[in-house]
Length: 128
Image 1 (cartoon, one colour):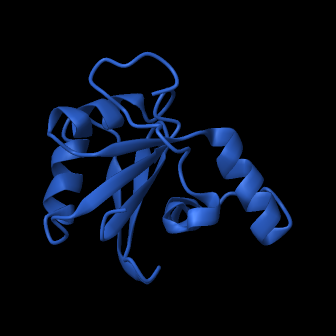
Image 2 (cartoon, helix red, strand yellow):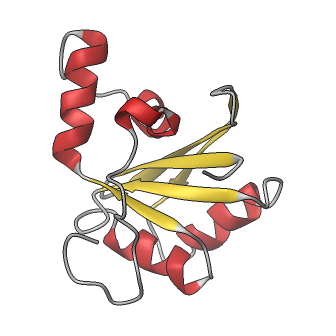
Image 3 (cartoon, one colour):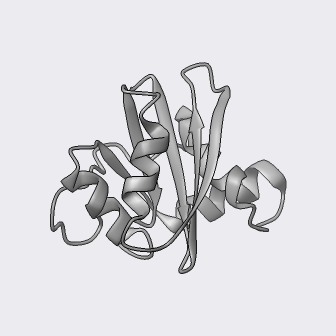
């Protein structure tokens, strides 16, 4: 596993990113507008952590464009199924209410991380 996991909670209008270190400590948080320059903004912010992996919730849905932009930039990107996100939210908080920074931060944990082998590749079809 990379030194830093950057979880992305994507939405139609914006994406929330949270960087989590190997000790599961929060390193930073950023919210970017969903637009053509979204990946550039995230990559600039994440430059401080060269050994990083991106975990994008719904890389086959709302997160598809961002996941593909990151892959095209040479980044390692993992797909986190939205159903897994909801299940983890229910188990950890007792309800399914969304909180974008918390959703993005959950993917560092081994017990609720991305599916093994769910790596995204250029022009992938579902599940990535």
